[in-house]
Image (cartoon, rainbow, N blue to C red):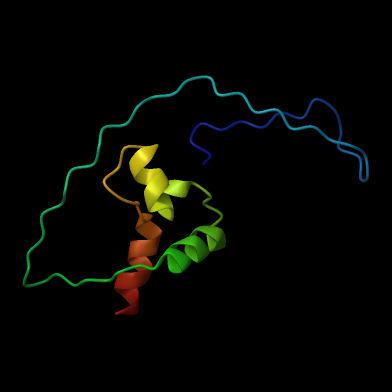
Length: 97
């Protein structure tokens, strides 16, 4: 994720030369747990994503955050009630209907 991300090159990159990447996490802000959304049952539909669909969508959109495809990680590490598909993923499902 690039929320507030920054890239700095301290010297030119040379093809074939060894390069080193250093990542620094300056702050971590805990996010509140998401609340369950209310729906109008007359207008709702159900789509059950498979782990494979979620993984492939994350790979396709270059979004490697595990909360989007790994339910065990989302629950035990991030504190979600389950995985959290991206809004783009939901839009794809809705527009496909």
